Image (cartoon, rainbow, N blue to C red; front, side):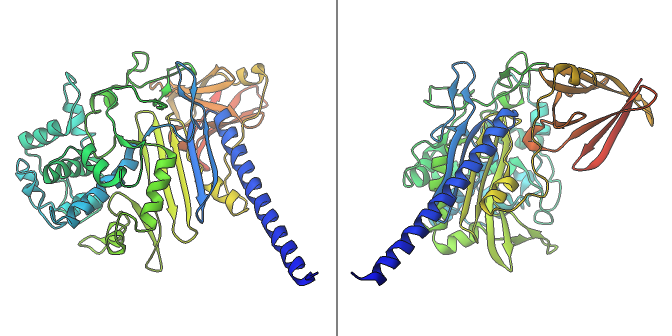
Length: 472
């Protein structure tokens, strides 16, 4: 018997078993994390996490449809919100390859109506250095809501108003959704195709992203199997509804639904993983094209712009360290992220506006390291233990402001006498409560009974005190 080969075989078997055990442990810990977040109303969606070409975790939590209680899974389609911008950026790069545009072209070559924006280059739109106004401000406020706005309406609006630029192009970086809406129109005019057809022909179909497409669910609704509707809470309840539900009445996303480029690409975590793999392997872009898309540029004042062609980009020692994007729109919270150094991909798609993307916790699990500020965990308290803190709290430094705390379904709700914030908090100890805030923004409340029978309220955000009050 060849004992040397036997020992080597046993050793390899042991290593393989240990590696499998490690992966199972990581998968279990990640599942525990997302189960906790789902139970705390902080996650409803799908997630995919991969490292060095291996999918370590893939799952769905919560409902894709609150009416029929269909559940989210890795094949569920979500609106990508601002994560859509990366496809517009790469679409522009492909048009450049075809010789149909140049990055240094003035945008008036393709948008002659916008002579008031003359001097802005395609490059400026890509890097958010254009100085063009944000359409979700002025345009949205002036839109008469008699129909759903489209890119054509947006171009016509700026053509008629002749707004001036907010700053000279490439003198500073200022993230602006209008830039990518105009890039979408440039793609359509330069290619002779509508945006969905162009992206499908050039990107989605070649990469077999079969569940990825442009979709305006209010302008042109259609039946899509396994589709995740974006939700928010109905005020003063834990029932979920769409933003345009009459009980919610937040109509902005509805009337802006026809505008594409800044958002409106829909996809799945599995398709987005195909996308990241295609980018990193130069399956779609050449190495030179990829480097251009992911380049960190500079303003005329030599300030770094850590934004490529629809990607947030980071460098380390002048080499690409990571790229990705986040999104928040119409009940969706999204994240796509790729760490080049570790060959690590994190894709998170929420269909609830209080959903979060727990990046630090994920990295802590993958690297088996403690997290500096872990997400607080909800504890169970009797109803009476929560109700004892309800009431009106007066800020001793600003007696005109009243903090109003009420009880709702095992949570405390924060409002003021001037603004209905409808901000919900869950208990993390007998007297501390964590906010369920959009996108996982931090907020907490602490109640301290005093010897004179009053209760003192202290409100903090990211560890810093932002308010206080006393209930007599």
